[in-house]
Every structure is written in C-alpha cells, then in structure tokens.
Length: 322
Image 1 (cartoon, rainbow, N blue to C red):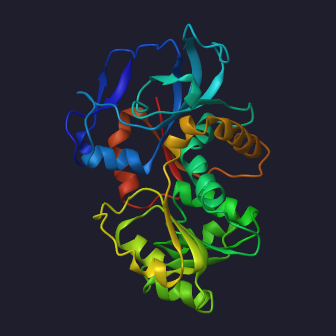
Image 2 (image 1 turned 135 degrees about the horizontal axis):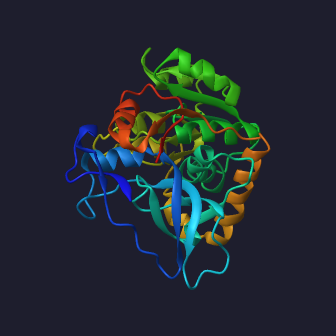
C-alpha cells in the first residue's frame, strides 16, 4: 500500500510517499480501506518530535473508510461497513488495521471526511464539556483555540448545554466564523492578554469551565480565568512549551484542574463511549452538529498539509485523501 512515512522526526518536509507492506489483520480487529484521514494536533506534534514506533513510521490517530477484512473473532462488523476509527498511529496510509472496539459505524448521510474528524475532536470535546467539565445551563465556558477541531466541537457542545460561550483565536476573521457554531464572545489573544479580556467579559467573576488544548503559558492563563469553584480541563499541549505550570492560583478560587485523554476512555469506559459516539455521528447526519473541514489534500501531499496546519491558517480540520 501507499503511505506517508518518515524515518526521522522534524519539519513537515520529513514526509516521504512510499510503498510499504499492508498492515496485518488482528483476530479482534478489522482492516480498513482508508477513504479520509483527519490530521490531529497530536499527529503534528508526533511528527515534529515524538517517538518512532518503527522505521519507516506512519503517524496518525484518525481515519474513516470501508471495512476490507474482518478478524476471526469479530462478530459486529462486516466487509463493506463504513466506519470511522481511532488508533495509536498508522492513519496516514491507504489501509489501516484497527481493533474493532476502536471503530464506529458511519451513518449514510455523513461523509468520510466528516467521519474521520469525529473521534478525537468530538469525543474529546464531549468529554471535556460534559463528562469531566460537568457544564450546566446558565454557566460560562471558555474554549481556548476555539477554531481548532476540538475547539469548534467544544463550542457546539457548550452552547447546546445552555452556557454562555467565550472562545479564543488568533484572528478576528476566524472568530467571526465561529459565531455560527454557537460562540457568544470572541477573544483575539493577539490583541492584549486574554485573561484580562475574559475577566472583563465576565465582570471580573471568571468562567465556570475552561477547555484548554494549548497548554504551556496559555494553561497558566486559563487557571487565572477560573471562577469560584471553576473547572479547568487540560487536553494536549499544542503550544509545545514546557509542562511545568503554577497551579497555586487554583486554591485561591477553590478551582480544579483535570487532565483528559479521550483515547483512554475508549477502552476503559467503552460502555459509555460507544453510545455517546453513535449519538454524535447521528447528530452530525441530522445537521445538529457541524464538522468544519477547512481543506483536503491528497495523501501524497502530507507534507504540505502538515505545513498548512502549522501556519495556523486552518479553521477546523485538515484532511488527507489516499
């Protein structure tokens, strides 16, 4: 099969488009003919400096496609099923081998590009807002990096929960586009400190929930935005800054800081996650949730796609198509 691979980490230019062996089918898994790949923030971070599981390495958490083969112990998937899948690595390829428990059936009205962008972005956002963030009607939520894939999903979930939604981004233009997804107030962090802007928007009270996928210095600011008994959720570290932060201000507000990793939930809490993901996909098919696909590149142009993401020009997800 064809795949976008690299032999060393570094800039997007490390990608090579090569023939590699087809992945092996596991008895409890499925082989997928990949139709679309959503590039996640973690994919970019891993390519830049993550671990090389093997050489050549195939990076990637998310893909969607059609089941090609079914493992001997699998009873709830069949050849021809449309699925979206979550994996530790390997999505940047024409085929993927995935445990069946990490796949979800895709409704007919959802495109492969949309479906590929669901597991990490929407699964993570839902857990941040609801399972761990416990957002309630009438509360206020701050969504950092609001125009990212996780951010756009979190804005929608927070609005559906009945909250006032504040979101940050690097441009007024992208923030204006975010209003159609449910944002009430936009904060351009390049125009002065976002902490001061958030405090002003909340009359000094702060916010009940922060969803922070940026990390580093931004996470320190997120903690300062928390209201009395506020909840700060940290998920990822796209800033690539050191992870040492000052948590002292949490005690000044009786606030809490929680780390969320959705991948862990998919197998530790599968009984909860499976119906949750099925509901999200159904809501996308009905138009009640929107998936923002900014741009699509051929798999052979993975380097250009990663470079585009790193330019911070994207609104939502960037996809690859084999």
